[in-house]
Image (cartoon, rainbow, N blue to C red; front, side):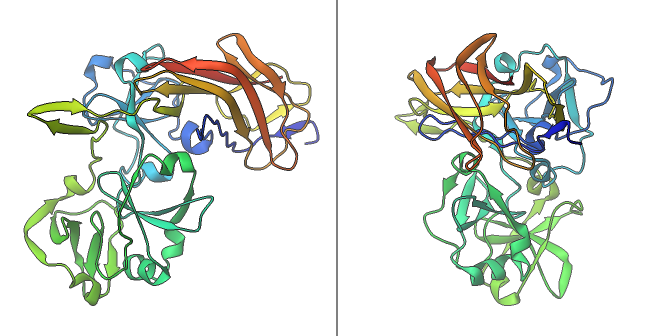
Length: 364
């Protein structure tokens, strides 16, 4: 084993102000890839479909604007789906950027009420609500009231670039009543599930799939909400919201709201397969491909990119480079032994408004 430099799972952080990219098993290894996959034509893809490229493991959700959003990891995917049977496979040369451009909200959040999330840089814990919204849990008592005594087992650390995609509630959840998006039940009648919507309990009409967690809460908490005369279908509980473009009406006209210089990063569908180890002396190894997308109305200049190595194993002695196609961008860097980071100058790379810049990480 001494002739291997282990990589394991990697975490890369790229920054212009605060841009971050994750390269991990969660993104690049969502679904097993068959040796031969039956492909479909792009015109067979409809809003609400799941897609991936033949040979790629990254799975995307297609929203109502025919834009793609990726699943941050397999666990989040499994809060929405039981398996990968319905994923449509497209040919390797399919131009996703042209046919299914990145959504404004580029990542699919876990199903509301399924998990709790927090930043790696803060102890604050958030519940996931519909409408791409996160609500801070006021304290441990609130978390226990809404997610049970074992609530800590549902908390997942999330990088800031993911949390930054979602809105924040104005008020914290104090645990006195369930929040929208939760599926709940009374302790004395766990067979009857309720979906919390609009601050009311809507009985779920039908049998929920096993991957939907039903949270059994105290009567006092559930009785804080009225039981609606309406029911909620299983499909409503398990369907991803197609919310990619924020729209507002002004004077009878519908206008799209965008932010100038809105930059997002996403793992490229043709990123190299995660390396589990490399022999000493290996050179010219492409390990990561990602896209810098500027969805704003003005050009954005990237001054530097910071890569942060995470997981097990060391990469001491290997020099990393950033490439734009076959053109090397800036000088090579090695990872610092204390911070596991390498900061690259990218020579003022400009990402035009509405365009995507693909970049590659190469080890030499």
